[in-house]
Length: 310
Image 1 (tube, rainbow, N blue to C red):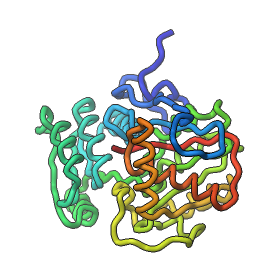
Image 2: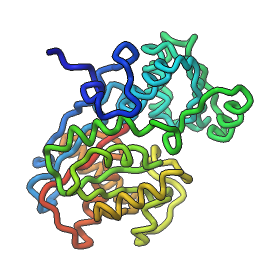
Image 3: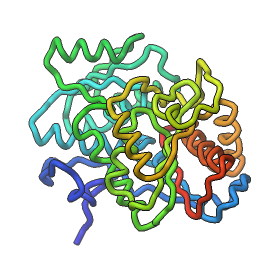
Image 4: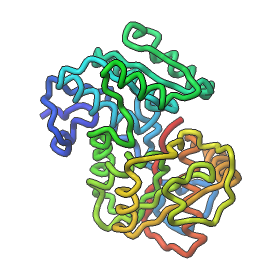
């Protein structure tokens, strides 16, 4: 029997169920898992793996969430959606919009990173009739206002119902690895929340945030110097409705939260590149979280680090 495409290989995990005729996919998911054995960083752990979510079709784990959510919109007959984004979700949505036929209003910062701007332009090049890009200094508040004025659904990872569903597939793909720890770069916490629904129960979940944005990690780790800027620019959520849920997950799995400064992000990004591993600063952030945990006396046998974003 032929496997379903992308995240739909695990369609029984998701709630609500989406009939096959509404399921859209760009073959997201089933991303490679690589052992960081050749990296020039000695963890003292033989089994350190990177889950390469940056190898998804548009370059981030967001593809899993958007594939499910846009399929849900299509199933429900919803033809428009508003998405405020720091970049990755917008790029993903622009690609899945063409596949689903759903019109998307993208609210983005007028200070969007140049590389993300270029990738977004490429994504909407042949789908301009379905994409409206609004750049503003207040993308979230302006998006909320537009949503209320026009009665159009707004997608926000931190509080949109079902935003976490597609991320369950990451937990499923990691389940049989039986890792004892997972390190995740966290903004709103939606990816972590979704993964936790399926990851094996003995895996300790560690969230990693920055010295600029540490909405949740500061509850666990106060050993850092606050900074006004961060290299990991996809970590943006200063407020998240998932805060209590994420804190509960961390405590339940006996994991922790780590706050990382720019110098450490840069250090591990350089070492990754020197070892031939090219990923985002968010990936380096998660790796730095592992090292901070080791420095604080944590012991691991098998670790997975989530690399996502570009």
